[in-house]
Image 1 (spheres, one colour):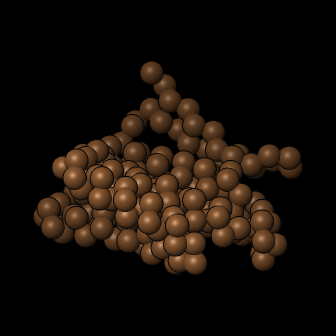
Image 2 (tube, one colour; image 1 turned 180 degrees about the horizontal axis):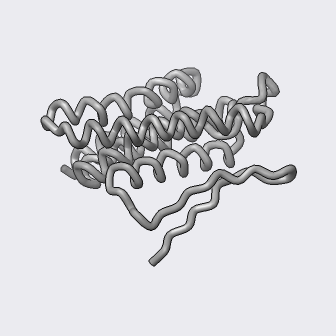
Length: 173
């Protein structure tokens, strides 16, 4: 087990230094992590998990797209106004949290490392601000945690004002 984690860390370190491929690797991980999460439901013959994945991933992407088209944050490279939140990070984080909640933290370690790299790549290639990446990660994590292991007392509300953007998370103990 420890060998797998070390190999994964070494591979990710090599990816970081392959600067010309940074964006491509981040793009790949954006789809690979949730694809592995979804594929695992077939491998494990986990029909209930598949249903949970549909809800988690669908909610993540719907929330991300809705915020992108209401917040209209300019990207650091001034290309367009779709910066907030990072869709790459929200997608990858949903897959990682799904694996964690459904099959255990040990299996999710490589996925979480991939999420970190994905977030890094989006900032490194000047497509997102750090707050965009953080918001995407929070959206993906909350959707994954909520739908894979529902927390009945959890309330998540997007917040957008004239001078701020974010989400409010409330949990009743």
